[in-house]
Image 1 (cartoon, helix red, strand yellow):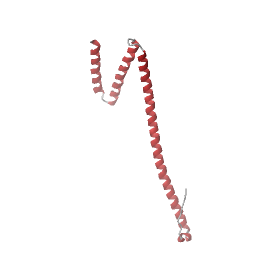
Image 2 (cartoon, helix red, strand yellow):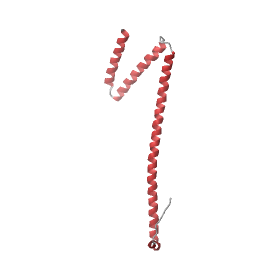
Image 3 (cartoon, rainbow, N blue to C red):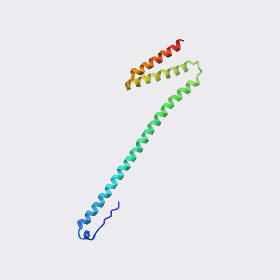
Image 4 (spheres, helix red, strand yellow):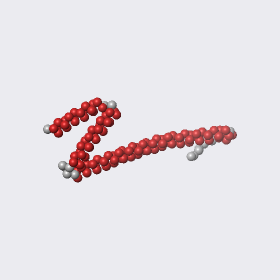
Length: 130
C-alpha cells in the first residue's frame, strides 16, 4: 500500500493539513482495496458455483451411465429366450413407466401422464393377445 501526499508550502506550516492529506490518501487506498476484494469475491464465487455444478453433473452422469450400461450389458449376454433377459427387459420398461408416473404426480401433471400410460398399456396388451 503506497500513500502519496502532495504537500504544499501552506501544509508545512499547518500540521493538521499534513494529517488530513495522509488520512485522505489512506481512505482512497482502503476504498480501492474494498472494490478489488468485492470483484475478486464475485469471480471466486462464480468459479466455485461452476465447479460444483460440473461436479454434480458428472456424478449424476456416471451413476446413470453405470447402471444403464451394466443392465444392458448383462441383458445382451443372455440368450434371447432366457427368462432372466425377459425379466430385465420387462423390469426396465415397468420401472421407466413407474418413474414417469411418480414424477408426473409430483409435478402436478399426473392425469395427463396416467391417461397416456393407460393408452400405452392397452396398446401393449393388444399386441400380446394378437
